[in-house]
Length: 210
Ligand SMILES: Cc1cc2nc3c(=O)[nH]c(=O)nc-3n(C[C@H](O)[C@H](O)[C@H](O)COP(=O)(O)O)c2cc1C
Image 1 (cartoon, protein in one colour):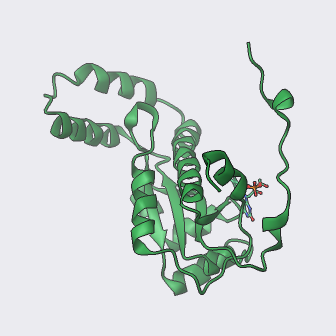
Image 2 (cartoon, protein in one colour; image 1 turned 45 degrees about the vertical axis):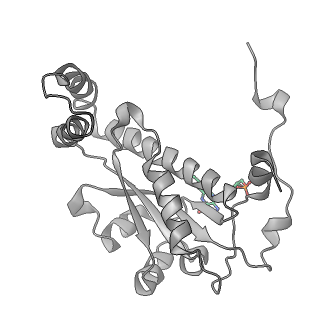
C-alpha cells in the first residue's frame, strides 16, 4: 500500500473497532496537529476540538448516538464543535492572534477586521450556524485523510443527537455546538464492512471538465 490513493481506497467508515488496540498518544497528537493546521474561511477557525477518552462520558454519548458501538470501542472520539452564535469577540481574538504571530499592528489589520465583521456579524443565526459547521467539516475531511495516510481507522459520524451531546459535554455555556464526530482507532478483524467494495459514481458521472 504505497500511494495516497491506495490509502484512500483502504479507508472506510469503520463500524466495528477493536477496543483492545489503542492509537498511541504520539499518533493522536499528529492527528490533532493536522486538525489544528486545517484551512478555514478567513482563517477564523470557528470551532473547538474535543477529544473524548473518558469511559463514563462515552457510555453516555453512545446512548445519544443511536447506540452505535464506535462511540465506546474506538480509541478516541473527536467531537468537532462549531461556534453557532459567534459575535465580534471571535473576530477580535483572531485579529489579536494575527498581531502577535506576524508582528502587525491593530491599524494594519483594521480593514481585514472590518471586512470580516461586515460580512459575518449580521448573518441570521441559522446561517452563522451552518457556516461555522461547514468549517468544522473541513477539519473532519482533513482528519480522515491524515488518519488514512497513517493507517489509522476512523468513522465519521452524524448519527447522534447534538442537543444531548451539547448537554453532556457542557457546550451550550461555551457557545459551542457538536457539529460532527470522528471515531478514531483500529478496526476489528470481524468488521465485515472492510470487505465491501466502495460505492462511488464513476469519474464521468461526477466530474465535469470545462
Ligand atoms: C458526515 C458523515 C456522517 C456519517 N455518519 C455516520 C454514522 O453516524 N454512522 C456510521 O456508521 N457511518 C456514518 N458515516 C459513514 C458513511 O456512511 C460512509 O462514509 C459512506 O457510506 C461511504 O463509505 P466509506 O466511507 O466506507 O467509503 C458518515 C459519513 C459522513 C461523511
